[in-house]
Length: 135
Length: 188
Length: 210
Image (cartoon, rainbow over all chains, first blue to last red; front, side, top):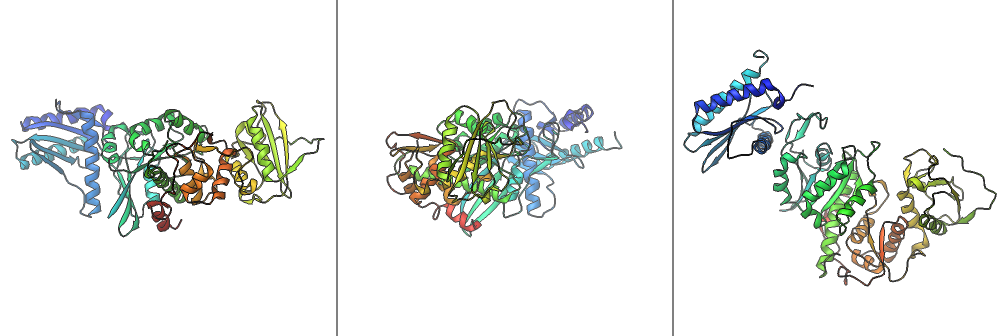
């Protein structure tokens, strides 16, 4: 049985690197996490605002619900989720070809376009790091 | 449209998703993810948000069936859905470690529904040797909730007539409690 | 399986009423006993009270509800002796339910007293017992409050005999709490709404064809 992602040190180290680079690229990033499909946190950027493990579970539920909505409406797969609040955006998307999800909270001083662009790049980078060629 | 929400709760692996698939008249909406806790329960996938199914009573009335994830880390979903439910079918698999303790945990978590007589318990995988008897569950529940009598049945969650029995018993129990209250008294 | 010992004494013979009385008496005794119930023309039903189980060579659906005579034999057994038959066998509840429903010809069992009120201590496991919708309804009412037979029938809009038979069966199964206290606040003074017809139960039942 393979090691789950949230217990695999190599994956955890890569995930931490990706999130740190994300923060370096975008000062408005308040919080970010990589989590497994079934709601376990792989790694997160420290944040006083959230309980990381609870956020991971909630993000997993949201991802699954959005996938279910897209399926139900026969619109293909869910590409990303946006929760717009008065204080900023929560962006969430899958890491391509992996059973991981990237969830990120941006302050309201960030544009949605840039937040989405950085999130996509980070998810793609994580996917590349986890691909068989990279391992 | 009149709607009645029934929850399916219980520990992971008890058969909640299967039970809803057995009862639902529509294809069940699933929110499954790959299970990374195969050492806890050996299942390939697990529900991470909710399962959703329906029974159309008539053109103007339906019963909505919601299955909640079994793991405590998703208890925010329990909080969201229990507010909307009139009753709950609590499923516990008899081969779980200490299934009676699990049953009591869930009854406490959903105590408001329990106090309204809105709980029926189904014991799945009772054919596996070594698990507690139905009477053991009933005794434990009675010791904790002496004023409530919770129906406890052995069930195969794939069996339509057994799952319908659980559902009909739940509704009958809620209506019986309500009927006695309607006569100007509260059930003793 | 233990071979039932031949006995010199003549066994008693009885219909299900007397069998129910015998079973009830045995269950009041704490000493472990084995029981054989043999309706005339049928193979014996063996009961091992230590394991709350019975064995019969036929399915319970073959139970002769109108048996005029039932041979009843008992045999003391050491508590740690092997089971009479291979376990888990069948739950004794199923047999007691069947006997209790069919004994006493619709009258209250001899051990019940006028003025008694009954409340369920636990539900029977109906997924493994033959039952009707009326049984569910009566059981649900008994789970809510202490009710006399008349109050149970009235609140369930069921026939008095139906209510009596289920009280007989549940008391034989020892799953009733019995009190002689006067009616509590939950005792219905008027028939409850006919939930089997007009409530969600009735509508869903009709929809599912139950």
